[in-house]
Image (cartoon, rainbow over all chains, first blue to last red; front, side, top):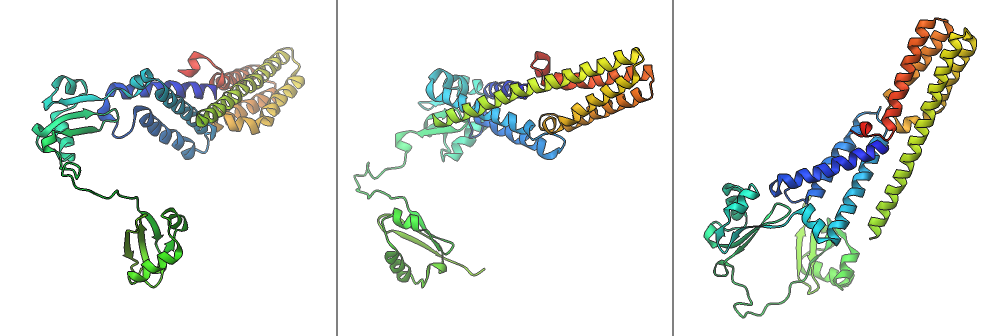
Length: 225
Length: 126
């Protein structure tokens, strides 16, 4: 067991360092430590499952050790900027004031094709329209367009708008969710009124109904199986 | 913070159990090794009956620990130890000095292998 714990800690640290060295492109949406845990846990768990001759503890001990490492490292990342920088790295500015920083791209092994792909995903087809592009620590690219290319907001147009409220699911597959009804401050009577207004005799006829605090509702009828 | 404390407590318990396990395996393997050495001393003196009895006791001690060893050792390692311990009894019964020496070596080798797996050493880690 002690050997198992030591080996797990060594492999965990080695993999975190490897992920950091490999760079942001490899990570997708996970931080390096999360990625390592996700990769290792699935493999460790499979071993005692597939082989009945291996004690379950051979899977349990490394998993508990990994969770400990992950929680402690996350705690360190939360509390210390130095640890955060060492473990997760720092965001890299790829485009600054419309200029592509080629050295930064080389340092992150970020190709032109990848940059263009990420920009397209953000709806920025023209590189010239991007003021800043930042490669985040999780490998995603944040794109900030020039103000002149940004969509116009109601504030810029001096248009008054009501604030949006979060709609809650009141009926899910014919079942009324009481907690959601209370959450938007309405009662059963109000719900029944809304149902009959929209041509439903009963909640069972509704596939999904959502509503917000202002009473804005959305209905979808249940289709026969 | 609660999560960190809970995880640390579980990990501390795991370390405690791991240390207990190292001590348990260390004690068990030492006992079996010294019993096997003793069987060879007795066999060389020609006290075959006592040697055979001691070899049986070593095998019984290993079997008695089965409930615990199955939790912490690979089942193939446990079965290997079972096989060599029982073979050692067989060679003691047949009163064959050379074969008994060979089987004692096998017991030492298998038991040492199990001990090495659990003992905290740089070689075991890497």
